Image (cartoon, rainbow over all chains, first blue to last red; front, side):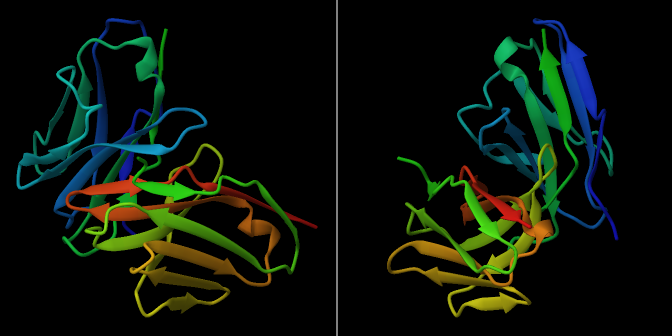
Length: 113
Length: 108
């Protein structure tokens, strides 16, 4: 069964550093998402991406965040200058069509020191 | 105001029990709804979509009441493996809104 994959599984970085989280969505999926989940809290929407552009973003997704689909398979989330409060699990998700459900990757656990 | 609200629990039930979770959503324009389960430190996994007519998948039954903006999940004959956090999700526009989750522990 096809799966969403994410790398790395864990990332430790220093405050102020840039990080890039990588995702490979399921191959025939057209809609892509990033979420974050701070430990012990709910899953929070960050951004949705369709047809090579951002379709919606939340208040959390400020200027320090960016997304890219550099080729036909990868979908990346860049955090330009990490803050302590960016420490969280980051989940990528994808879905095939507008009326279909989404499937999540295993997540990247980011720790900012 | 929270988009999706759930009772966080925890619910501790014996094996074989029936347990029900409730969820409310605030945006009447939400177009579809889902239940996901999340095991500790893992990704959310789709349990089932929720339809207005109600739907059943084995021991799991989901109901949607659009007039009351209310979603439910019923688990019959609970198994130890049902222990997890159950997330209610509303799809609104291009966003998916998650509830905080309801924690279930099934006790032998």
